[in-house]
Image 1 (tube, rainbow, N blue to C red):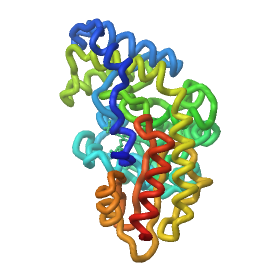
Image 2 (cartoon, protein in one colour):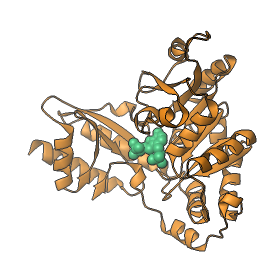
Image 3 (cartoon, rainbow, N blue to C red):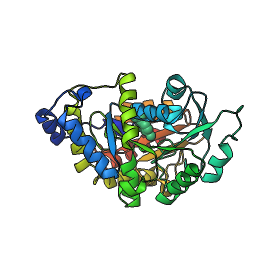
Image 4 (cartoon, rainbow, N blue to C red):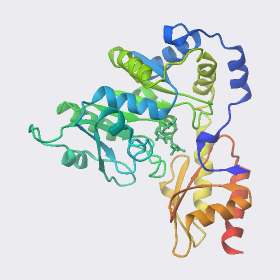
Length: 341
Ligand code: TLP
């Protein structure tokens, strides 16, 4: 199988499995797991922040941040295709009592003028804007990237109005790879950051929340409230440490493979994708009239290629560690033969 559904399908590497088997562990609810503590300290250091917290999933990390930053009855501004709004079970409403205020951005990237227009006036009878959530890279907008300047501009102006900014940085190391700057610099103005170890970095489980000591202390309590207090989680953190130290440098390869897929697939008349816009490891491909995504996915599956579909006329392909350049070349041939032979 050539599995292009997501980078979440990556399996832990041999080095991760060894580190997991040998991990020193303790009870993390008592703050006594040395490997979890090491991972959290290392992440805080990498991001140049006071503290970090290991959480079971990206969704939990995002939702903890929403709960801490907002009051019930407020709104959270997010790009309209944002994960926090579309793929997290309306959790911000269910858990924090807030509404998403979706704003469309070109290629998923919001500009301050668009955000400003969605901020509610400060009058007591209007729902107040409690938080702005940015997504870098932007998953459903085809892995698009906010530059540091774009993020800083939004953060500075939001802070000027007293509004915090959370970063859904599930794939922040993909953005860092493209922009070629340290993750601490790219994210320095955000009030909180969530990133995932379990996507392109290949760890089996886990994400981190990063921020000030006060924020992370609150986050630890909310994590427990949500049932996310883990015990000997060092076995997972051990894989996470390998992910952080060893797996970020190779993301460039995934980006090259995604570009290759985009270039070749854009030559097929039934598929619409602009290779120039593919900067990281995600391709969102529109289907021309006459094609439908579930049928195309099913026919590719018969030929051992797995892809995801977003809408009846849109599919998603994601490159990762467990898909080689040769696999991508094979997938392109299979697309060609399924669609045109
Ligand atoms: N994304 C998954 C699906 O849920 C769509 C994927 O296959 O890409 N933020 C972003 C930007 C994400 O892409 C995801 C997962 C999450 C948060 C949530 O992470 P998990 O799955 O760990 O809860």
